[in-house]
Length: 603
Image 1 (cartoon, rainbow, N blue to C red):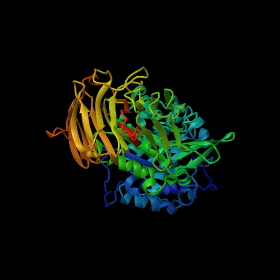
Image 2: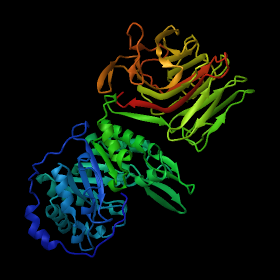
Image 3: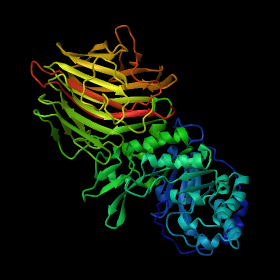
Image 4: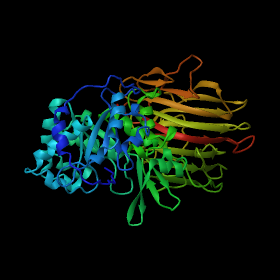
């Protein structure tokens, strides 16, 4: 746990412990009920660590919305070498406890922290343990809190740790008080099964990962799989921890930035997990998308989400706590928890990629960008055929974009995002498509399905033609021939096309496209604009600017093409732009932005 504790002069609470011991098990509850704003699973926990070393706790009474959390852990309470807790540590705590209880929020006192607390080595020994436990119990009574969070880390988890935890549990549990812990990856083996049984739940600190990434989504799944799989802990007892801060290299040390500082200094960084500082160093953190993905993971496979720490959050629409509650109460998307992977098209300058005299192609993979920025998951690719006049152009800004000019030949200019690692069979593909094709002809063909890194229609140079093409789940096509509108159609199981709607797409305009796909083995449900829609096996729905697309026969359940087996993950899509020959070559232009793939976790 991140901590920068400032110790006050020690002041004994032993007399207070004797006078207050009888108040410990006062179970009176406040009469005011907490307003439930979330549609999270029953018992889902949202745990905020609130540090007390900056100013007095009372100064933070309006620092965040108490109705958006279920637990507040006060960080940190630590004893002196004699096991006594300075009274100054609790300054202003009564104000926090009173407001928390008025909102049905539980308050725990957190012991330890990430700093060196060498006094515990002696206090937890058999000679001193019972007396020290009594002093911890006295804190619960003194401050009328709901339990203790044991955040001993590193060398403080020694051979006496288990006896301390089980002894503390023996006094707390019978009287309805909570005992929890914050646990780190590198000391996981020191947490015995007896300790796990004693804790009501554990907060796994899935951050501060060795290396540059700090807290990737995969680190959260690694922690979760270990505690629920290898250690057999019930999912409801595992809370996934996320950071509200970032790390960057600072000489031989590690620099740290609050999330609020990152988004204030670098507009647009709230949607990313890495941002290059003005000093050239890269700060790694969790932006809104990753925080929401981890929230979805926690809602599906864990017991809650925890964050260190609430005072590092940004405000308003940039708030990570707001992102958590928005994800839990979303009325759009798969009705089961789902995660969203966004392709960040950001770059530092406008860059054009094109060559009319030779075949041009560029592949980008995580860590190795090509013409396009490297995607966080999977591969991206652009391809231009020889002598076609097509080009690609990245356009940075608040909403980064990539613009393409269609090939003038039957071989397409092709943009692809494919082989996305964490893919599932139930998914949403969404993107914003801006058209600038008033005086043109040609086609945009957009297939979606499954691909490996070997040659497929999603990453090779070929046009998608009217033959069986392995890997394709479905395809939408826009034809630009005559009139002011482009004709929208879908690919059938005979690999021909059926018109969906020939008026929704004007040749000039901006369109938000969402494609809900079910290649799973059972029917599923998603919610759009507060209304639920059923989606059968091997079917998909297309929405454009929040309007559901239909054929002239009012069919909106478009069947898969049969080129991809049921149950296969949907991890790829491409846009092929071709046939732009007359009246003016290469005037079929389209701009892509906000490219996302959202996967239902329960698959």
